[in-house]
Amino acid sequence: YQGINLLQIWQRVGLPISLSYFVTDSYFYCLPRKDVLIFVHHCIMCFCHYPVSHSAGAILAGAGDVEWVTWISIVGYTSEVSTAMMNYRWYLINTLEENWIGFGIVNLVVVASWGGRVIMFTYLLVVEIFPRMNEYVEQGQVFTYGMMVFGHAGIGLLSLHWCLVMCRGGLKSLFVFKKKAPKVLNPEQGFSFADEVGGKSDADDGDTASNGKKRRSSITPLKVIEEEAEAYKDGTIFSEGQALKRQSPSKKKQ
Image 1 (cartoon, rainbow, N blue to C red):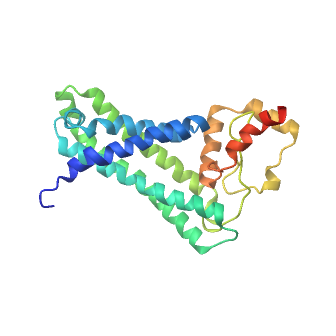
Image 2 (image 1 turned 60 degrees about the vertical axis):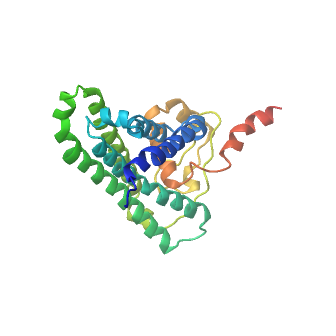
Image 3 (image 1 turned 120 degrees about the horizontal axis):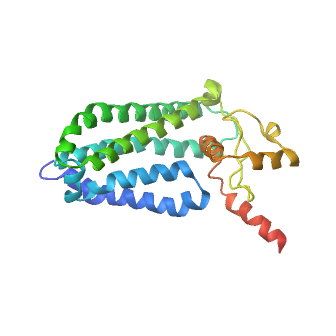
């Protein structure tokens, strides 16, 4: 590109901006709303990519091969293209009033993007990273190699999880839009999420006071993560009224 060093641009411009976003999003979104899965994703991205932002760190991260590890960083980041489609999908969920063929097309693209992430991270691990294990051992960078394997495997598994969540409701939930009332934060237990992906209607979701108490007493961390994933899939986790709902009990007391 006529003297333009694209790898250096990625190191000095692309990565710093992206990592700053992950830190900011973690502080202002993940921690206040206790979004465990997205917080784990951000932590993995930060810890695994930040050494590449400087040549000295890239030498260690790539066992001496700066260009290769920077290329791995760039290719890994292409998986974030799916985020743009998820944002558009959230927009459709919150603005559509009736079924639209474009909603099914967007869902199909989103599922394909999550599946593509799984394939890509599997390829990077099997073809690019595993064969270089001896080079990392010779350089004494076993921990660095372990972090690279953990990072790619972790993001790959998260991608597989989101793909399964998207498909769990069946083809009908993917291609047919069904408007749902937005779920809001429950001040007593954090998040209050839909019980099934693309399944029950709002009438089916209604609990009595006694059932609500039983549910709060039996909730587990894994259940919270599962419901959080379902709410992310439904687009209800980002409802603007959640913060106001959380503050409402204190206002009533006053």
